[in-house]
Picture (cartoon, rainbow, N blue to C red):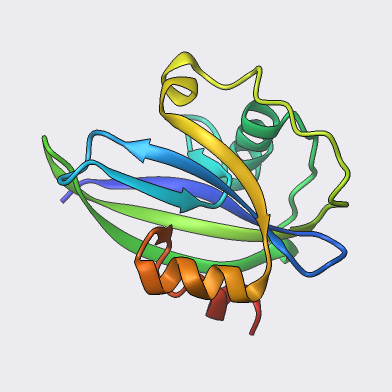
Length: 147
């Protein structure tokens, strides 16, 4: 089975809320709308830190400097796509960001913009509700963020 490496971020603000983005995933079986952490695939020639830096800049317009010491979690997730099933090998980093920091999605790819629904800061109880409704990824995200 193919393995796709990705780098993602748990971005936490001063209120202990997490920033999530909502996308419609048209290429997965069942075409789901999910809240997910910012981030994306590691491209050829990139390490996970470089990929995360690029992805956060493209998706949020924010410059970050990820370090290996910021790694919070490494997780393999099976993705059941319409064309193939594959493993998403996800490396999660944790960062802090003030909630009043401007978010800019202008640098997202057109494909991302077409599937993007919005972003929001979520508190712990709101994330529990997303988990209950099974509309957040990864599953059980709260246990990784608020250990």
